[in-house]
Amino acid sequence: MSVEHRETLDESARWGALARPTPQWFQDAPLGIFVHWGPYSVPAWAEDHGELGVEDDWEAWFTHNSYAEWYFNTIRIPGSPAARRHKDLYGAAPYDAFLDAWDPDAWDPSEWMRLFHRAGACYAVLTTKHHDGVTLWDAPETGTRNTVRRGPRIDLVAGFADAARAQGLRVGLYYSGGLDWHYRPARPILSEDDCKDRCRPKDADYARYCFVHVRDLIDRYAPDVVWNDIDWPDEGKNFGPYGLGTLFEYFYAARPEGVTNDRYGGVHADYLTSEYQHMGDSETSGTPWENCRGVGLSFGYNRAEGDHQYLSGAGAVRHLVDVVSRGGRLLLNVGPKADGTIPREQRECLEGLGEWNDLYGPELVGVRPVSSEAAGATRALSASGSDEAWVRLLGHGDHVAVVADASDLQVLGLPSGFDYSRSTILTPGAACSWDGQGLHLQAGENPPRDARGETLPVVVTAPRA
Image 1: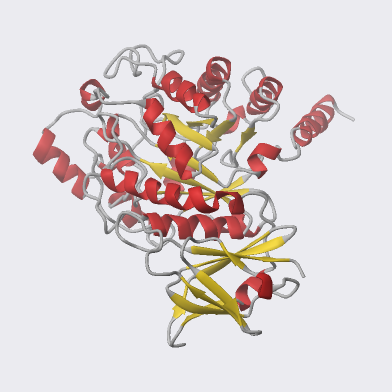
Image 2 (image 1 turned 180 degrees about the horizontal axis):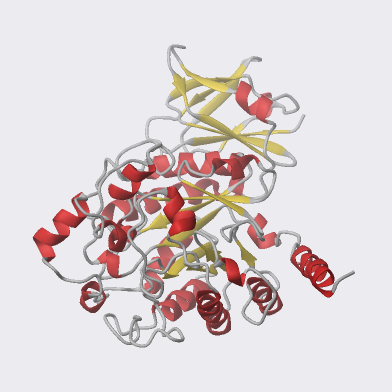
């Protein structure tokens, strides 16, 4: 056997040795809060182009990008609405002018974490470096291009991590290993192939740069989650001194209960991710998974969005319950304004989640997905029988929770094995009854509502027979 072949076998064994059981805290974490905050929060603008995963024309997606955090890329696409608007408002001002203009004078990280905790979050994830290459801490080799040396003149990562832990939340740190438009400049990204291949840096020096950054994040802030994006430079996907495999070994040694996601180009993952309606295959893989999306259609704050784009509190509850009912967890993003305040519509969404979590939060922990056949057979009809309503099932070892949009409806086709005649409705003022065929649910005259006046989904539990 050649030395080269033996080294390949040894490396393969080391990749395999990284696989571990999912830590219990992550299994029991139905909700995390994602935060995208950067110089892009100053212009804070993107088009409403719909949810990622709906658009089939990738060139249209990048030119008319719904993501405000992609502003650096979008304004460099000739003729794009973002480029025209940037020229009209800011002339020839470079992107880095927004770093200098960024002043988070109203930021209260403790208040953020109280809001996240009440919403039911178990962990919070901050973007420490997005694709623009600006770091939210005094990262090695960044010179003055970070938030400690310019703009905010604050270590935002430290403030975030300290406040999260004080509120009992696990700390997650996002890092863009796949793209850095400053350290490795490239032409504007116009297609999926550009993003995944042609405009993605793959060289050993950029791999070293990313390695040093993430190791510094681990040393300084001891994250529970390392959340990488897009991919990792190909020449660093090894166990060399600055290799990704070496970085994983370092992370797990420092944080034995730490987890990382799947966005490294397929080499390793503790859990898989989907984004809005994109990469949905991860949700049926049987591997732990997480869906991420914004309260609106953007991750970074977009001043062009309003109630039409933002999830209501009730809408966020439905999405969270849907994800958890299928065995996943939700990483729901807020995009703060540049001053550090969370926009009213996003705050109201989280407050609606909090209202629901106060009443039913334990039903989201320890869920065992009901079989897809049984879940697919369950349906909810209005009292007249003419309209279908939203309903999901949360399976537990000793009971099932039926979660439904209810004013007056019948839930039919429920899975066997549970005694629905002994059902209990957990919603104050609501009522339920079993007629031998289905559950009749009534939300009552004054059910819990969100800030828009939408009734929050009701919850009924039925014990095992």
